[in-house]
Image 1 (cartoon, rainbow, N blue to C red):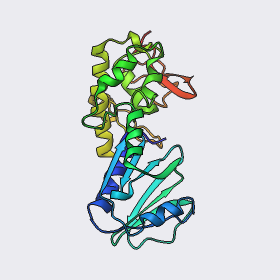
Image 2: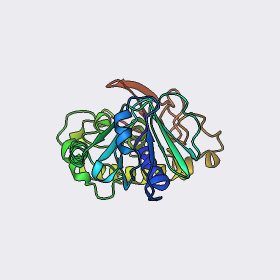
Image 3: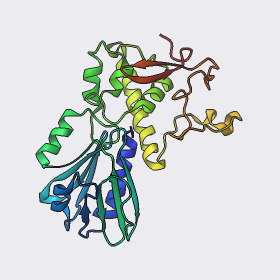
Image 4: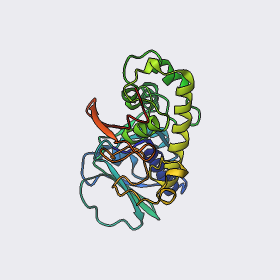
Length: 271
């Protein structure tokens, strides 16, 4: 599932291709599952885009907002006009004189009101990529919870936008055992985690990939081969189970936590 930096990148791309153009868009649903919504949007303008956690919003003025959640299988492809014949199950195609965007396989694609959009924001935790979101809201829940910090970081009601990669990597970078109860963190540790997530995820938005290793642990600095993985990016523990830790040389471990794979280094993240 795409992590929050990808959703913010998509919001910016939709903005640059459509809302900044200021022209009406063509809207269709070749797959047919969003035909009624597309018919309402056809010929209208996108006047704003937004993202919160893993939710993407396209604003159509008085008509409301298209809420998109990609889920596990959703994808967006952009290209230059004229748009080719649609391939596959395209839920929503948007076009203008210069560009097209095809949305395939999302978990959600719906036209909602401004009030319904606000209700989505209200149920989500703060997003490190939303400039004015307050980390205190997340800390209030974490500091009272007996649950493991690794699970809390993935709970979108606690913290929005963080997925499996960012949670594994930020806990490693701060030497925090993933099973430590949230209430056993101190405020300085939480502040450091939040600050690091803001920086790492902003880099993710800029580069379109997740890189978490410090300069002294890059392939060039260590004389090691670059990581080869379809997720891309240089990381410390994510998908490195059984391999040596880049810092201490111990074996990276993995386990199942709430149906998601957890990765950590027991040597660098002691209980």
